[in-house]
Length: 408
Image (cartoon, rainbow, N blue to C red; front, top):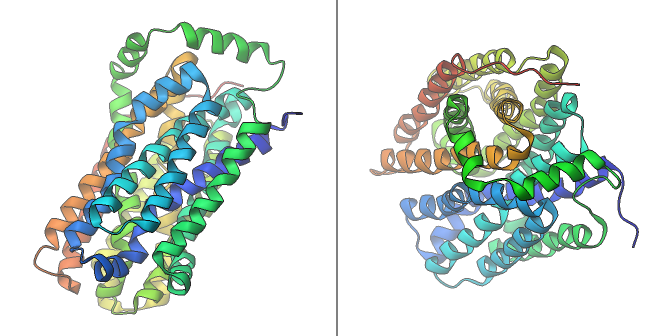
């Protein structure tokens, strides 16, 4: 059977798997109320359920990076998406909260394989000078899945229920599994350089790879930015954002979900734009710093200033631009890739990609604790200050990064 030779089609197929994993990150936010009613879950229970995905995803990033370097992205993603398929089915039929938690763990396990795999595909199929641009496009396709998990998923589950919605997801998940199995290879056919790199990857010492990545202080600085900024963006868009807007701006949940979709639309626009600007200027650190300054301004407006004005159109505008720069830490993955030996790309990507998911889990827990006395405009506004503080920490950390320059 003839294999696909277009790097863009290969990337799109892996991108579809990435999109599905992204969808699951954010799907709990709009079905939180039905889950509470059907299974008598508390706010803390909803937070824990959402976080099970992120904890599992985070813990598996280094093992997934090792497996991708050793076995290739194709095999790893097929196993992972099969786990997502099973998790979606289990979620749809689970009669108790415990089984829902287990289903989220299974989905998190499967989705964890995709990010390091798609970055490995980018490293094998695309030129180094294209990396930030294609990484930005990867964020676009992933966040398209996150966007679908807002208002569209809200309306779908209103029509067929949250169980029916997850059955639909299970069917969609079959598509990348089948295409990758029959038509995708790990690297371009006849690419001798990629073959040599794969041979080196099979020979590398896992311990040496982890040590090389962990001993690089810039790994940890990138992780701080990812922990704070991506952790907040995933927490806001995936769980707390709709309810923050609903209570603080006193509008119905469906309108709040629409505004989260506006935030996600900003991410879709910002992802390729920031990556393209970074490649054109051959700068990672400076572009990221400028974006994080805008992000800090955006959170200040959303949390502290706009609630006094109650102008929803203005909130939508600020959410759009805040979303557009929330994705800027994608440059951290490009930065660490350019500061790491090629044979350790999977390990390095997996290592730093732990940070956003532990960040999301911890931020979710912090906000749940701040909401422990009940959900109101005051408690949600207090909880959202976590996003502002983390944006400040990420901005300060960016000054300690090392600039990396893409090669041609």
